[in-house]
Amino acid sequence: MTTLAGIVSCLDGYDPEALHVEVARAAIAACLEPVVEEERVPVAAALGRVLARDLVSAVNVPAHDNSAMDGWAVRAADLAAEGETALVEAGVALAGRPFAGEVKPGECVRVMTGAVMPRGADTVVIQEVVRREQGKIIVPPGQKAGQNVRRAGEDLRAGAPALTAGTRIGAAELGLAASVGVPEVLVRRRLRVAFSRPATSSPASANRCPRAASTTPTATPCAACSRRSASNSTISASFATTRRPLRRRFRVRPSARTRSSARGASRSARPTSCAR
Image: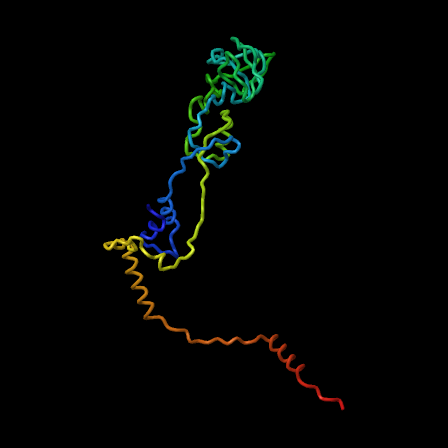
């Protein structure tokens, strides 16, 4: 079985006191196995979790054709290619309160942003370019069929994956999952992390190559450990020839306050002469 100590100790340039972060991460990742256990949790409790399976939308988003702007819903076939078009306002459609009837030729319906498109209408003319005259709505030329309309399923179609497996659920993903009407999601089990330290350890054992420590008579250190051993021997020899003992001695000198206190104590300790 491959151990973390065995992988790390055989890395090029291995130093137990100064291991590069990226090297340490790569060594740890080599010993890890992906979590495969799944859990079903409510959407409200899924923040920060990782999806185990694709999250498939059961509905279209948006669910209906709706107006992207405030204005009037019209039939593109009624609009004149040249000149203005006069239409009769047949009703009003609000967000959450659709128009109950159907737009007939020569008619239009006042719509607000997010309102369901009335039956028969396929284009929205923004309110900034329209004017009222004698109870009619005057639409200028230059309008395009289908403009300012958000189609059903434009953001997400029913049956299509809203989020793919392996996605970490953040605030945006949580809102998307709630918008498609999914009460629960399948996520990966949370990681279990344990920290342990051997009861006894020494620098010598930390630098020992596990291949060389094998009981097999023919076992030899790996190439990286051999190069490190030779380099350490050279460095140790150079330090041995240049090392000098420190012979300098330091004497602690008392501060002025300490000296003053000592003098006062010595005076008070002197015997006083008799007044007689």
